[in-house]
Image 1 (cartoon, rainbow, N blue to C red):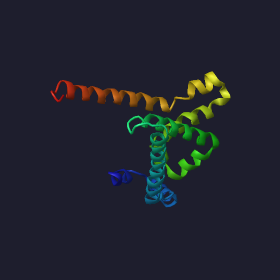
Image 2 (image 1 turned 90 degrees about the horizontal axis):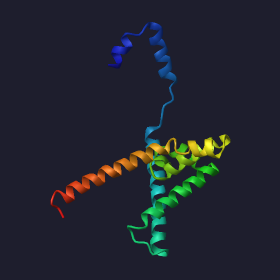
Image 3 (image 1 turned 180 degrees about the horizontal axis):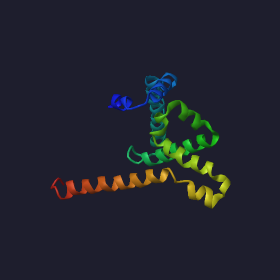
Image 4 (image 1 turned 45 degrees about the horizontal axis):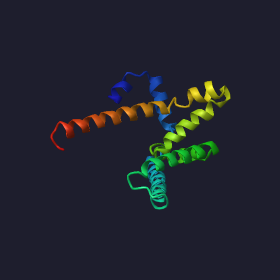
Length: 160
């Protein structure tokens, strides 16, 4: 299909297309995937270590340590974003830093920092959840759907 589109190009457009391809930046896909995997894994390992700290020192169970661990990871990401460290990490790791829950904290604080000159209410307050709002919405909605399916299967399916 790409060849069909190229056939319809004028000679000048074909020449420009070749010119563009010769100067296009080659992306190191394998290197980027490895960095994303390593950084994302490191973030998750830090989260697991924090979870163990909550279980060992604060007498949480494995089930109850999850919420404070998530809150701590988001807080750490927000602090690192405010200091400018997380942005450099995100440039290096790409999705490896965006996919874990720390990416949520980064998204919230980045929008707040960007709009702080507009004031606390109309700037920070109004724009803080611009990007993260959709994450909250879809997360809440998907949790509702999963709970609804679980209720239907367990309660009405006779699996109690």
